[in-house]
Image (tube, rainbow, N blue to C red; front, side, top):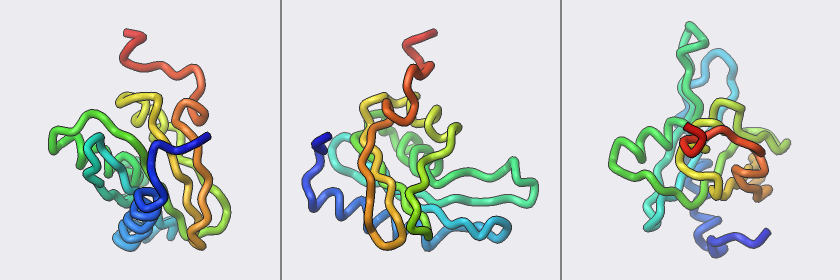
Length: 136
């Protein structure tokens, strides 16, 4: 599927997601994740995973980026890049998919490996038949 982003925008999201990954607080899993979320208008919000000794209190990089953006007044988003330290395409977890769905099914998702290779998909493909605000 063709992206609504140009190559420079995609590269920027990849760069920012990998930079955010460097701030990961993951002393238990050692699984570093970074995210870069582009709002409508072009502003990018970074997020990283932040673990907690209680495990359940951890927050994923994707949700961190969304919370930062929403807390600054943004509600509409274009794309997100999610980076990991591995060269195996790892997609957002189920709770992140549901969380992202709250803000629109048409979100582009770039799943980025450590070597900068990426797969482009959509939230709708990652979470088919989603339950969202329109179902309430």
